[in-house]
Length: 126
Length: 126
Length: 126
Image 1 (spheres, chains in turn cyan, red, brown):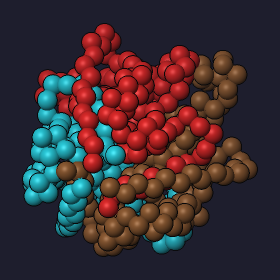
Image 2 (cartoon, each protein chain N blue to C red):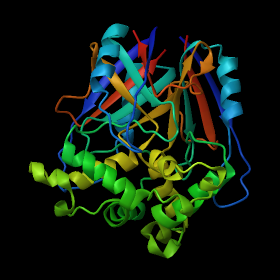
Image 3 (cartoon, each protein chain N blue to C red):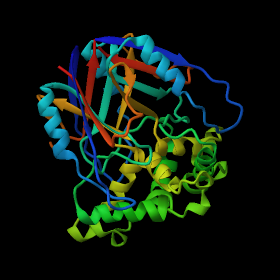
């Protein structure tokens, strides 16, 4: 079995923002030389999320607005977590909603997600 | 390591519907001849979700109603994504909530989920 | 490839509660002797969730309150699933939101999550 691990760092400027890391992931899949397998992309902070979605600026605005308006308003005083001195309880709840990691299939050396299929079932093991 | 990949297509009739693919997944696990491993079931469209839950018609109605009433109403004009000509921003937000993929343990050649245990911890690697 | 499977049981006292299983998972990673790989931690009940987050009592209260107040109130009569005699439709919807399982990278024999990095990309396969 092949295994390849790579870490990403970011300098984020705002309290909440979306960063497209698709190219980084695709590059690491290539570097790994894995032909059949999976790539796990996981946030190392529990107030962050990793997700698969369109790179479309209107949708990104929709997502940020929806997180604030529907899922969990930032508003620190509404949360007990605030009493610890941290003001990011909403970021934790948003991360619980969107998810902490994604796992993407690799088939024939490529991230297997761009084609016109509905669902992929990929079994790995012995 | 064994690897087996299979794609599913669907003809969906409504804007939003739930399809049970359990039998398809179980079949592909069998075809793969994997005894110890994992099966990844991942949507290829980012306006779709894959989830594990009961096959119970009342609950399915509850889920669809909840997605519309609580998570994200369809209502295209409320979303910026609508300006691109697409009307499915709500489907994107619903998919972010429910999740894009699931990964299920395989133990002794079977989808390891039907038994009366609370949590399974499965480690794979070298 | 190495594979190691372990099951956890719990005696839960309340309708909804949070249990920290980090030590159990870390122990099983050690027992597995896997140096490079992934650990899947998956709920065997579809009314339960597995998630990665802080062990902080204020935040735990915030999460439980948020699930009841924002995501899905318990209130059985509001759900069709209730007609089957089960009263836990809300638990299903909450589990759909938070997620049914997590998958965590293992690097150099340890759960790779405590360090000051933002995102890990881990590729496994052949």
